Image (cartoon, rainbow, N blue to C red; front, side):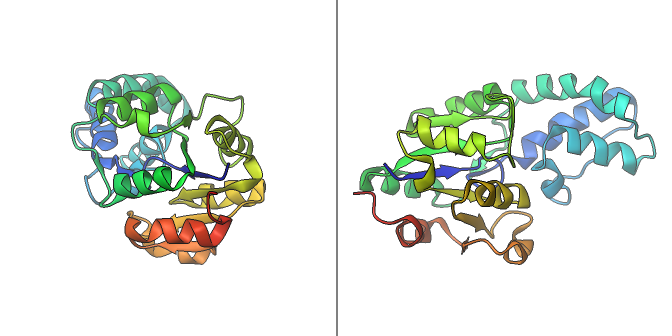
Length: 223
């Protein structure tokens, strides 16, 4: 089976608002107030919890690895308690997933979000059953850009790892697909969209309406 594997944050859904809120919870606990700004720091949020803590602490001149290590569990706890308050799927995302599934492609997720949080988010949003596989940052001993999580997501979706395409939003996704020897499609509607062309993916995605045709062009028809 041919499979279409999606990154989650910044690709399928804009999760930045809830991520930033969790980071600011930590910064308020430190006595800094709300350090990160919704909208302005969306791209930082989509790079993960440790990056948000690092970026914010550097902004207030208080960065240390020990502080990031200390507050990361607090961030995860705060995020898990309010994981779907602001998060929204990008326009057409779920419709494209349905079309791909209906055409016979296996559809899964490969994310650097911890698997438990990714599963919680998709369940809260009512769409977990639409994805045949979910591989997170801690599912395997390695994470993206190592190619093995992508390959495992394809396998768990019922596909062959050489016959998949990765839909993502970052250099991490581009490098993961390249290491796996499969094509990547990078979205241009996220906060880092203007930078995607420079990464030279096999295709750019400007709207999810265009995804089914791009997938067929890149890896062939499902059947």
